[in-house]
Image (cartoon, rainbow, N blue to C red):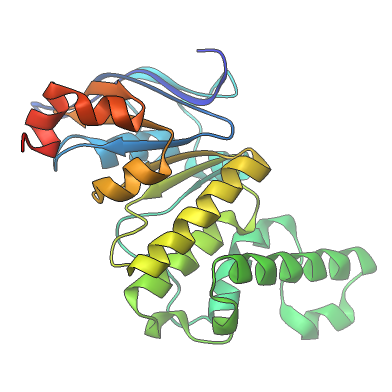
Length: 256
């Protein structure tokens, strides 16, 4: 499907006799924020697992910039610009907030902190400085710049979610998969989250796909919404079109 950075084509997944996904087609374009909603058990997290390489589909393909990556590992996908957050917090609790973010850029070289800088080659020191500047900027953009030296394990849920977002975008993403990023956030934190996501899409051309149970948040943030139900795509369109769809209202949004 031309124009999509990330595309799932005809994806099917079974767990024994249970069909979790059945012929799912979904694409996300550069600079787009696409929402994925549906009732519990619809297959949203399973689809994220397939897209990020944690689980291989029983059938169908995953394409990144038109290339088949269905059998590529999560590490390969991460190094080619795919980032993901999870429903459950995945922070390194004994590390500082700043170090949690720096970890995401470790594979590019550098690392080791100031002591290692003294013994490092100039190129390594330059990479390390660039990593730290990028990390500080991302933390500031996420509204948590003052938390850099705080231990991540002691943060309240909303701030921890923002650290996860900062880590996911510290190394500039091509594709960003956000699994319930607003869970546990206050209204101001959700606004900050939405602002960061919008800037990533508009200014860096990132393709964003997010799963979120806060339907009002999804409808306000996303330009397109896909609805999953029982492992199939029930509806797709603009927020207004999805809101008005009688099948969606019956299956998920309610008829009132």
